[in-house]
Image 1 (tube, rainbow, N blue to C red):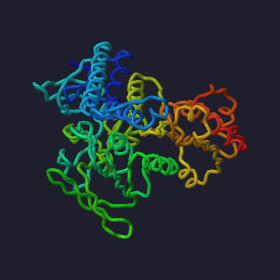
Image 2 (cartoon, rainbow, N blue to C red):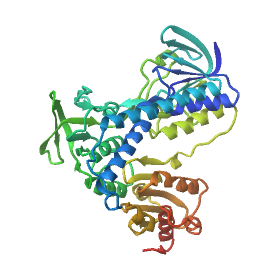
Image 3 (tube, rainbow, N blue to C red):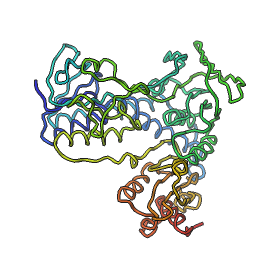
Image 4 (cartoon, one colour):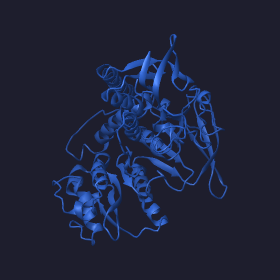
Length: 465
């Protein structure tokens, strides 16, 4: 069996790379070690977490806002088992969809652990051992949850994000180690269902890789649903019994604090997953930090014809970043000249309010000495937001002080995960804040807040504040 392209890993980067390669007329195969296609994102990441976030938000609204809307309920209670069942069905629908796309595009799918015999020969260790030949190989094996060396993840009381998607009960006291995207999203699920959530974060703010103003605003919103935050705290020890977890941490002064809970989620990031690939057989060494695979500007490793994309290479660990890289590599192999602007890959946090951003943060612009202007507009001043009772948050627009080109857009509020796409389009075409300010935005919509922020960035002329 000889293929033009073999993709190792079937997450968003891998399966999209395989589809694009097949579309371009390349004979393509994909290898997945697990029983279902879709990788972390579809099976234990993006999709199942969003399903639970949606279910928990419905419950939270029913419990806390329906009465104001004039909807009376009695005997309201969450059914966690049904939420988990619905989540599992959503996952199945999506993974079945990937199977369909493989068949539609005539992509051969193999199940088993792939490893290099040489750069053009892949062994698949599945139900039986198979060997296939490849002209080009794309490594898309993704990542796995990280932990700290002194924490024993027992998957019963001390969990990773994977186990947190399948709890049998709603925690009374949930501890999150890490105030990043993954922890806050999963914490939101259980906080909405009644859990008290304590976040222990080493940095001095949550979502520390994003613009600091977003973290401050999100922290205020999450406190309203039962979050507590221990910022600038370093975890020193985690111990557990059959019914309890104890997390010990120290603040900046060295003072120790002990937090008890019935579950603890370790959400300190993710690590590139390359175990078992046999990279050493073809001369590929991992970078010392992060265990990433080094690649050039074409996402090709130092071994000609072997490419790597997604979480196993440098950059943000985002499904849509992996997809863009999958398309990029497939088109490059086919002789085209694709491009990716990494500055314009948006980041999103699916809490409520949602958080979304693209481009440079205010901290980055200051550090680079860029002369910029800032315009901001709150959702509290939006008619649509008031009608929906979703008034937390704002949109902040950063522009070049001389050219008025948009350099960064940072949003926190209702549906900003979708709204950020307008900012991405604007920045892809190098629009100015004035360009957006002159475009008609339907009324009443949340997107008017983006327009108003752009008006504020251009001579401070927002209309509705």
